[in-house]
Amino acid sequence: MTDVVREVVRRGLCSGCGVCAGLCPAKALAMSIREDGDLAPRVDTPRCLEKCHLCLDACPFSGGVHNPRERNIELFRDQPGATYDENIGWHRRSIVGFRQDRSLREASASGGLATWCLEMLLEKGIVAHAAVVRLADHHENGFFEFRGASSVAELRQAAGSVYHPVEISAIVRQILAGGDGEPWAVVGVPCLCAAIRNSRRLRQRVPYVFGLACGMYQNRFYTEMLLATSGVDGSHVSAVQYRRKSDSGLASNFGFRGVDARGPGVEVPYRGLPYYLGRNGFFRLNACNFCMDVFAETADACFMDAWLPAYWREPKGTSLVVIRNSVIGEMFQEGSREERLWIGEISPEMAVASQRGHVRRKRELVYMRRRIGAPEHAADARPTMAERIDWLLQRRAQIRSKQAWAKVGRKYGPRAFWLAVADVVLMQCLARSVTWTLALPKRVARKCRKMLCHGT
Ligand SMILES: Cc1cc2nc3c(=O)[nH]c(=O)nc-3n(C[C@H](O)[C@H](O)[C@H](O)COP(=O)(O)OP(=O)(O)OC[C@H]3O[C@@H](n4cnc5c(N)ncnc54)[C@H](O)[C@@H]3O)c2cc1C
Image (cartoon, rainbow, N blue to C red; front, side, top):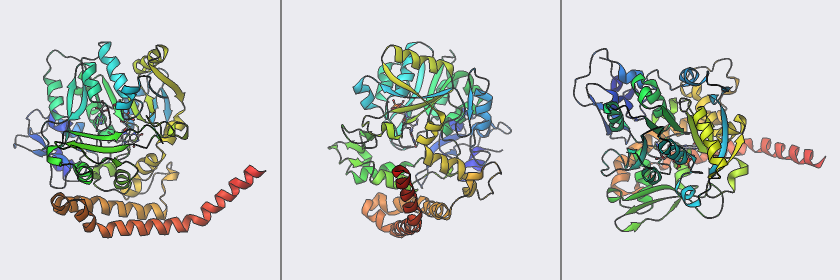
C-alpha cells in the first residue's frame, strides 16, 4: 500500500486540497484538521486498495515539489496562438480589467473577473455547475467549504477571496457520482487545480479549471487569530470577509472583518496584522515551501490582483488574468464589446512584474529551500545572505506560530500568543534592521544615480 498519508502528509507536503480523499475508490481517506491547524487526509478505515495509486497520481506534491510545467506543456502548448514565458508557462494572452457593475465589483476580491467568467460559463450552458467557496455550516474542518453553484445568484454569493484552506473531497465525490456527466467548472489555488488536472477521471468531467494566483497559504489558525484580534467569537462566526474594500486610498486598502451573534467585529487593516503574518511565515502551510506554481499553470485561466503602479490607485480593485483557453479569451472580448467589462491587454512581463515577490520566492528560491543547487539555466536562483536569513526565520515562525496558537493562543488569546513567540518576532525585527542598514549605501547610491540621470 502506498497511500498519500504515508508519502505526502507525513513528509509535511500536504496542502489539504482534498482531491485525493474525493478520488479514493475505497473511501479510505477522510479530511480533518490536525493539531497544528493544517488540513490533511487521514486513513479513516484501513481499506486502501493495493496498487490503486489514484491519490498519489493526483497529488501535485507526491514528487516532493509541485512543479506544474510538464502538465502545462501537455495541456496548453498546442493551443492555437500559445506563447511561452519562463515564469507563466504556456498561455495565450494576459489582460487587466474589472466588471462595470460597481456593486458586483465591490463584492469580489479584485475586479470581479473570476465570478464574471463563471457566470458566463453557466449562462451559456457550457458547464452545469461550478465549485466555489462559501462559509461552512459546521466549522470542525474549517470555516469554509466548497459548494456546487448552479445559478448566477449562488456564484455571486461566493465572490471574494478566502485565505483559509478549503478541501474539495465532497464535491469530487459528487462530480464522480454524477452519472449524467454534467460538466463542472472548479476554481481554486494552483495546487488544487493541478490535482484536478492530474486525475484523468476528473479531467473529463471538469472541462474548466480556474486558478487563483497564490503567494503562500496560511492554515486555519491564521483566521482564528484574526477573528480573535477583531474581537469576534470564533465558535459562533456567521461571516468572515478577508477583503472589505474601502472607498478611497490604494487597492491594498482593504480589511479583515468577522461577524458573530453580537454583530461585526473591529476591522483589521490588511496592511497591518494580516500582511505581517503572511510576509513573515506565520501559520504558513509547509507544502507552500515546495510549490513552484505562481500562475496556476494547469488552469484555463489564472486570476490575480493587478499589483502594478498603474492600478494601485483603484480602491475597488483590478483583476489581472492569464488566459490559456481560447473560449475564455473570446468570452472576455464579448464582455468588453457589450460594455459589461473594462479590459485592456497587458504583456507577460507585466503579469510577472505584478507578482514579482512570489516569483522570486516560489520559483527562484525553491532550490535554497530544497537544499539543492540551482540548475545552470536558473542563474538568478542564488539567494543573497539576507534571503537565506529571512528564510530561516520564516521557517521558525511557521513552526512556532502553529505550536503557540494551539497551546496558548486558542485558550488565552492573541496577547498570550505574541508573548509565546516574542523571541521569533524580535529576531525577525533585528535581522530586518541589520539587512536594511547594510543595504543602505547601495540604496543611496542607486537613488543618487537616478537623480543624476534625470538631471542630465
Ligand atoms: C489563498 C489565496 C492566495 C492568493 N494570493 C494571491 C497573490 O499572492 N497575488 C495575487 O495577485 N492574487 C492572489 N490571490 C487571488 C486574489 O485574491 C483574487 O482571488 C483574484 O484576484 C481574483 O479576484 P476576482 O475579483 O477576479 O475574483 P472573485 O470575483 O472575487 O471570485 C473569486 C472566486 O474564487 C473563489 N475562491 C475564493 N477563495 C478561494 C479559495 N481559497 N479556494 C478556492 N476558491 C476560492 C470564490 O468562491 C470565487 O468564486 C490569492 C487567492 C487566494 C484564495
